[in-house]
Image 1 (tube, rainbow, N blue to C red):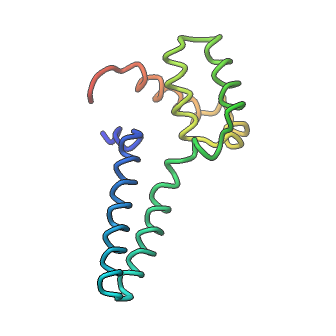
Image 2: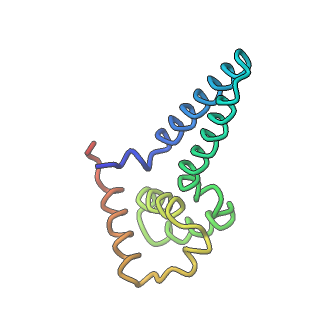
Amino acid sequence: MFDFLDSDWFNIALEVIFIILISYDIKKYIETKKREYIVNIVLTIGFAVWTLYPYYNSYFGWDEKQKAEMISICKSDNNASLCECVDEKIFKEYTYDEYKVADKNGSDFQEFIKETKEECADDSWF
């Protein structure tokens, strides 16, 4: 139902909204010199960090060498397009260290992989 939350376009839209809010408060502060706009700026930046940080695990938790290694292992085993989709979901869900210590045979990880493969194989809009 909320698949759009994982989309990169959702992240970009959130970033644009936060930039608009911050720039509006900066403009108003320059015009009026009221302290309430500084508070708004600080709160908006804080909320932006709190909101967007979970979406950036893939950018902080994996370096390119680790990504390339995992992708090459998957492509040798399965369908390339399915692997790419599953790998992207894993990069977004886990950091490299979390992925290494995760129990690959555990029920939680297996359920995650099963759901991810179903999502990646599903071509419908819903």
